[in-house]
Image 1 (tube, rainbow, N blue to C red):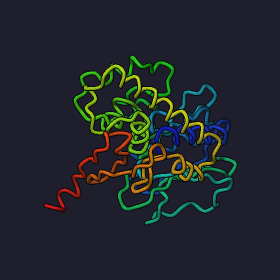
Image 2 (image 1 turned 45 degrees about the vertical axis):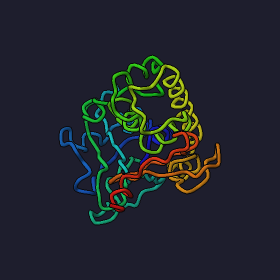
Image 3 (image 1 turned 60 degrees about the horizontal axis):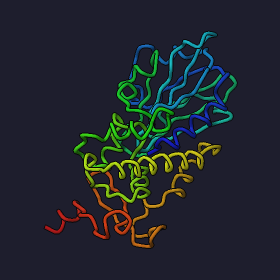
Length: 291
C-alpha cells in the first residue's frame, strides 16, 4: 500500500506534469471506483489543473477556470492501487472489463494517467467533490506528521490516554495521517519499541524517542522517493525498508533474525533484540494452528 512518503512523491510527480494543463476527459472504467455522483466527473472536463496536494494517503487534483475554485478529483490508492503515467494515451477509449484499469484521466494534449488496481478486492476509491474535506476519509484525518505544527507535545497529547497498542495507534488515520503497516514497523524498529506496547504507558523519554524515530523515518523516506517517476516508487520503497517485509533476514542493526506476527489480513515485522528484549512475540495465527 502506498503510504505518506510514496504519496508525497506522487504529488510532486503529478505537480510537475499536471499543473497548468487542461483536463479533457475523466473516464471511470471499473464500476466500483467512483464513490460520488455530484458533481459528476464531467465537471472537471475543460478545466485547468491548478494544484496537486496530499492529504494523508489521499491525493487531490484541484481545478479551476481562472479563479482556481473548480471541483477536485480526490483518490485513494488503497492496498493494491497504483498510478500509471502516459505521455501519450491510446486514442480509443478504454473498455470496461476484468483488467486492472479503474479510471483514466486524459489531458487536452493527449497525455494523462490511469489508476489501476490489482487483485479481486477492489478498494481503490475516487471522489469528485467541491473540496477535499467533502471526502469522509479526508475530513476525519488526524494531524500530518510532516506539518510544521506537529511537535513532540502534539504527539504526546495524541498518545495520552490511548489504551491501544502503539502499532495500531500509529496506523489509525484519525490519530496521525499517512502512516500505514510498513512505516509503522519501520518507526517502531527505529525507536526500539515493541509494537504491542500500550501507547498510554509510554514515558516522557519514550515519547520523545518515538517522535524522533517517526520524523526521521518519514522524512528520510520522502527524500529517497523524491524525484522518482511513478513507475519506480514501489521498488524504491522496498529497498529502503529495514524490517518490514524482511521476515527471516538479519536485522541491519544487531543481526538478530527478523520475526513476524500474522493477522487475518496483514502482518507485522520486528527485531526481538532491538524491540522486545530478545523475547519473540506470540504469532496468533500460528498459535491457533497448533491447538
